[in-house]
Length: 210
Length: 116
Image 1 (tube, rainbow over the protein chains, first blue to last red):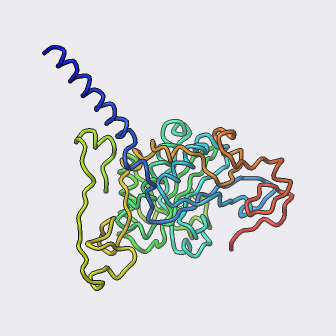
Image 2 (image 1 turned 90 degrees about the horizontal axis):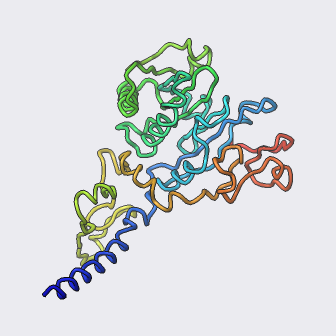
Image 3 (image 1 turned 30 degrees about the horizontal axis):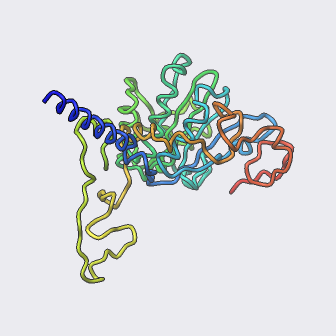
């Protein structure tokens, strides 16, 4: 009896081991998950010998969750970039500049981070913003153009760019979702690109606030 | 869509749900390529089909072996966490030789191309 029991236990242990080996790679890990949109990753280099536009470089595009992570795992986090550098993630075909046709009528939700937040919040906020975008987590995700992170000496900034400032309902939904996802307690403001063009961004008035 | 691996552990193993749809006539086939008989894979949202991922699912896919592989596209060394881990690194010196493709980090190169 005792011998039989041991054998049974051994037998079942073997089966279990086999089972775990098979289950080690969950089916989700065997495929790439397609995104709704193809996204471009841009980098702003801040080389003084180049024009603003020459400094803006489209590094690559990605259209699956896994390809996003491949990039993310190998490139520096925003907090590791030199001051003056930017990352931008935009829908393919939209350049991260006001002048682009898709941005002409648009604006941005602006999150300003104090210097002390560079270590605590900047990287987390940027990742969460990008995941909101590429996962299409907004009810009005058609209005999304992209997002930019500016690493600067004074204030680091994250901007979520939308296409049409006149769509109040859509823009406010987007602003609320960003605020909720990032866990921001204070107010965040929405600025019209045309206003930002003529004024220093800190002086630009907010069209919407949430 | 599918549950995260963590969620799966909590709820035991489940077979991937499947459904057999018997087609007896070509007219029963969907009229668009993106659809399969009986419905689309990703289901639909009001206003059309949209692929939506929750943050938690994307975070779990972060651990996938595919997600760990280095990107193949050329990237400037200054941007990389570990330049040795990526096959296609644009070194500032190497950039001065034989640069024929689009991305240039060499300021002496005047033919920087950009789609305008």
